[in-house]
Image (cartoon, rainbow, N blue to C red; front, side, top):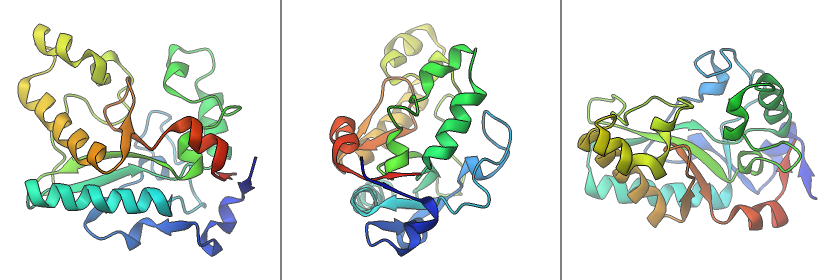
Length: 202
């Protein structure tokens, strides 16, 4: 398996800094205490990076959203997550039912290849669209596959589901793939192929 240290990412041509992607907002939640672990997991590392393939796909998503909802903007909540941080998260969740929401570090998170993003949408006033839950809400309300049942029960409303569908519309047409358990998470392409052929950031 090919690897690169997080400290060496800035000098590699394979990665692009999020600041080079026009039309997005950035709020990396794992670089703040505003996440389910409750502490900054990224400092002093700069994790505002994506593999260049994912960055190009994100630019396509930006263009699609700008055409359909002018004034709205994609907000990146997580991008590159080094392997060492994935191991910290894995350790923090040991003994809880929340491990199902995390990739085993032995297998590797697609975030650790710079090929996944956690993302939402800001409205014309810069407020996050109502998705029915916040980021990192590790409950069934966050599961895209359960949206029809949640809608039928009243746990989610039509506007919340429509907002999620807008996000998926932007991301899917750009080449991203969603997962069953988190409305905010998108992989760039097939995760088996990513693990087999891309470089993991340590």
